Length: 236
Image (cartoon, rainbow, N blue to C red; front, side, top):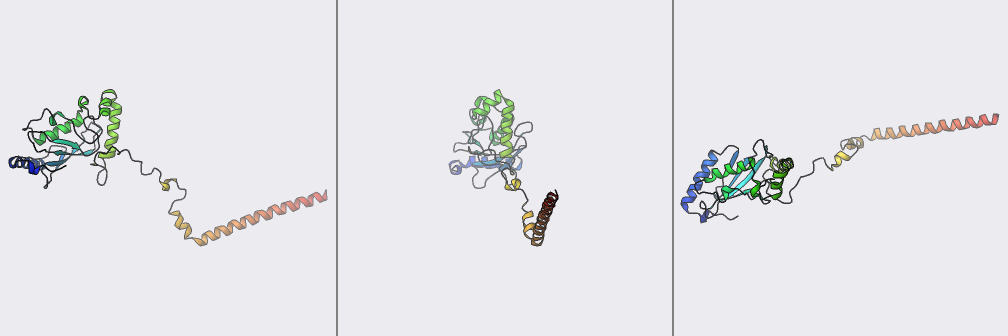
């Protein structure tokens, strides 16, 4: 998305810079701020999933985009981490009244962030962007909670190097477990046993020789028994 720094008047930019600096120095509980020195009109943040919700334990990255008419017009909010929530669309767009008809210029960015965090605690199925999530919230909360929890575990609990903060993608979905289809799990002998066997030629030869001797002994015993049986028949 294009920057709106050049479109905002200087006094608005000063106000935004002042508020973002204050947020970074003293952010609301459970919210972190990642200001950009290059573009003050796009604010990246992360929200800790509230306890007692299907989002607990997850870290949800989002961004606020300030348009050229800010603060007369509310900022636009987007979740960057995939989430199953009635008020979050498939592309991450957030539907909340404070970003629409309830917006007032004096509310400020702190109020917006706190409202979005509260939305994770109290979803509003009446203004659902994700209709399936809204329907399940009203008709089958257990299924809604299960789906929301699953996506939280997959996308918001990745930690360093994981998937936490990954952009919304319709093709995203549960990934197979690490051991699924792993040939190491299906194979008989371990890989470590192979070089040990290959590096022990003397033992291998000894084993082969032992097996040959055993087979020869068995054949001799069988032949002796057959000869004894023939001699007994002649006596009869």
